[in-house]
Length: 186
Image (cartoon, rainbow, N blue to C red; front, top):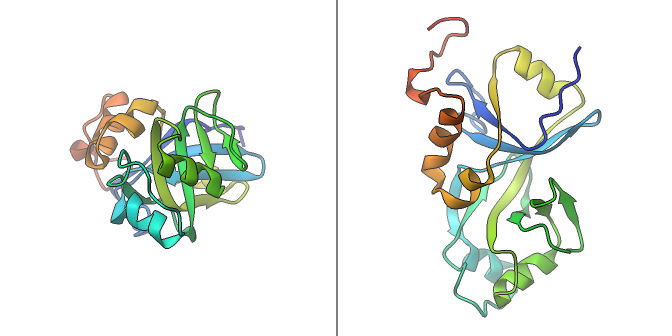
């Protein structure tokens, strides 16, 4: 099978996606290699904002800048753990550098900095992440479960959650509503 690296790509769930975790989702792939793939769903806010999350982990909120930022369902893996997708990259205790500009951080120090108003300027906070075993994502792509497109950070960080999936589709020149639920049919 041809090796493909989808790091810094969007996965767009096809309309026939039946998995309730991923139906109508836009997922940003943070890492894709021979060990598998890791990403976060970026268009599924949950009934929690950053202020509530910070209260739950006993971090005092000193800055109001991000208090109403929605927390998102990032995927079905480790849903009790927080993940912060952010720009710029910065220096945090536990960060996966997605690119020279974007990081995915799991350490508490980034939330503490955000609470003080000293964190990254652009953040997306999730509970959980999406993970694929070696070859699993490639298999799903071969089954027409996903469309892929090179990600643009502004789709994640500058658009409201409900506008992200249509914006990613427009990067492909496709209107999401025009996709058929049957593979191979227009």
